Image (cartoon, rainbow, N blue to C red; front, side, top):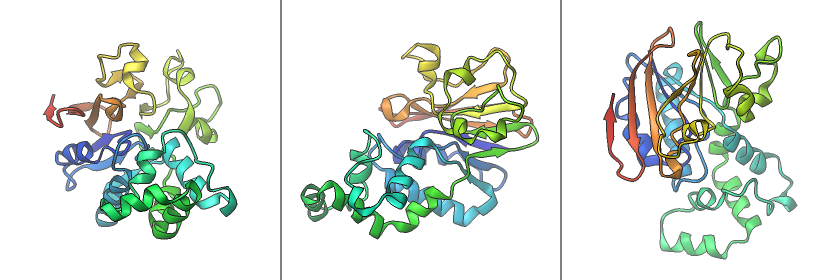
Length: 250
């Protein structure tokens, strides 16, 4: 069995509420990327998931999302003199989360220049950065593909296009071509897929080959978590509402 969630985006409390339903003795936890940005607690999310990976090893699979990739690339591969050029627009809460929740650290965050903030994270949180950098792009089983954004269905072997795994949207989601296995993905909030901002529930394509689970938690939606068997069948959907912080199963 698998316990699958995606696009936590710094929503630590909602993630922990979802994880309270996970059964590590019998289920493999799979997180489909985008651990960081938008929400308030990106660092706590990284540290919690990296700790779970150390403890449970093969029972935890964490994939790299485009936000995780951009953040790690910025801090691990950018020359020192260019650190002031942030990696994307949704950075403020993420960078602030790497400063301790104290008055002194809050003042330091305000005093530090953009470059100094990058240096601060690079110096004090190198292991967290390496954790993000080493995350795999995809997890494949006999009957399922777990990936952040989707796969390229227009080439002979989808595995050859790793860029699509982190970036693709409509060409995968709305493609009439059936995926070779059931694909579980995040990246595109399900409300956007449906063009219905009131519906953040799990989306399943007409052919049943694609399952979108990004409920847009960090944008005031919900965090969706699924129980999935080895054949890709969903036995339970757990919903964690962002605003209320409540959970329910279905």
